[in-house]
Amino acid sequence: MTRVTIVGGGYGGITLAKALDEVAEVTLVEQKDSFVNHAAALRAAVDRQWADKIFMPYDRLLLRGRVVQGTVLGVTGTTVQVSGLGAIGADHLVLATGTAYPFPAKHLDSSSVVARARIERTHANLEQATRVLVAGAGDVGIELVGEITSAFPGIAVTLLESGEEILPAKDYEPGLRAAIAAQLAERGVEFITGDKLASLPPVDPGVLSPFRVMTKGGRRIEADMWFRAYGASAATGFLGADYDDIRRYDGTIRVDEHLRVIGHPGVWAIGDITDVRETKRADAARAHAAVVADNIRSLLAGQEPTATYTPLPEHVILPLGPDGGASQVLDGGRRVVLGPEETSRFKGEDLYLGLISAQLGLDH
Image 1 (cartoon, one colour):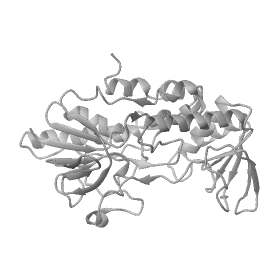
Image 2 (image 1 turned 120 degrees about the vertical axis):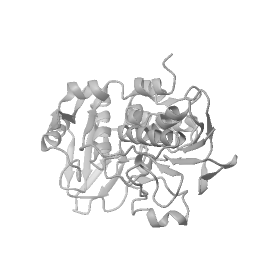
Image 3 (image 1 turned 180 degrees about the horizontal axis):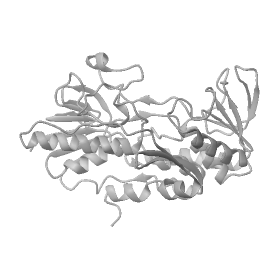
């Protein structure tokens, strides 16, 4: 059978692996020992009931293919070098390694035991904290503040953003920003916009240790803990110099409309590492996977790939804990801002746990 190797077992990787399991010899290479539902990672940091839920086994994902744990050290053509396993060759290689992002939004530890221990330490520290600084008021920073203020209403939170408004550099409706700002203001969150830290706090994120820092604008901030909610980077460091011509400044790599990697026959890319200009979201990664699955199936049938990917207009679901938040969605081609009740129903209640459990074969 045609061999397909998928590097990265995140939202896009598992969707593609499952879609091709019946028609190809699929190998999914993943550095972590468990799937991590990062959509719920921020909830896990404040709620012990979620700390175990975000880690799910890969055992039931594939009926025919295999999931192997290891770190990809390099790529030559459609062959990958994997730590502890050596070379894994394929007819088609799909890169789906996503982005690296600061804890607690992303877990980079290979061991779920280590990741759980870090979550527990953070939760124990939050139980004792009275003042928390969150640097970065993009999607992640907003959602993190929402989780902290929901679980620990006694904590005074300062949200620092270098842009002139929260959720900067995004094509969001003013009503979305207004709804989020109003809800966080009700929770006593202090907003500082148009300013940034003069230097990073002298303590690791998530660690309880009171500190004082200055902003470049001359403001002094005091807190017991802090979190960094900025600095996403595409996880493409394993790609060698032959990818330099198509690697952009942010680490993403160029793909065509079929999601083939430019200049690299037999190589495809999906999810956050592509240079598709859209917000990096789980639903986008799954949509990429559907396109590549269709195209590889076409090639297996002796046909040319015809499925293409077109980004949807910007949309977002931003829960502020289980019961708050706001969303920008499409309704008949029109962008509409929805409030806490709808946002909770879309994502805030289960943070896609049911959907991912079904994909991984864990719902029966």
